[in-house]
Amino acid sequence: MKYLSLFLLSVIFVSCKVEGPQGPAGADGKDGNANVKTQIITVSPSNWQGDGFAWEARKASSIITADIATNGAVLCYLQGNDGVYTQIPFSYTDYWVDEGGQAFLYNSHLFFQYGTGMVNFILQDDDAQTPAPQSNMVFKVVAIASSELVAGLNTKNYMEVAEALNL
Image (spheres, rainbow, N blue to C red):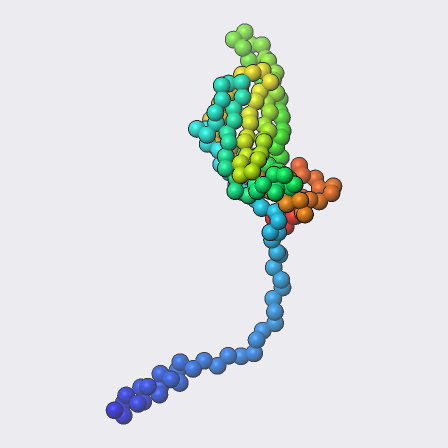
């Protein structure tokens, strides 16, 4: 019994913890913006539907509410292989070479449409011979409530958008 009492007393004293004074408060972290949301959407080759004239990939987007579709704004960016985002819509010039060695220029276009709960990505070449995408494409969708729209914001630069809207 004597050993049991000693054991219990030692457990009580060992388990007591003395705390020191509270340290200084840390710096506030950067708050997010509840009125601006982002979503990453990956479109695989099998998601595209089309006929060679144009290709479309319709994807669900829970961040595009009815209020944002009606009163806010939606921005979309395509992620390049280097991780840099390019705003949609965008166009670029490319070419193909026929059997005789003559080069033919054409323009490729990427744009999007959106509505409540969805975004539709569209690829189209102006020569009406748009090839089907052969690899995954990663898009960043940014939904902005009307209360957060910023006059003069350069929406073509994702880094500026992210900084201005606390993304």
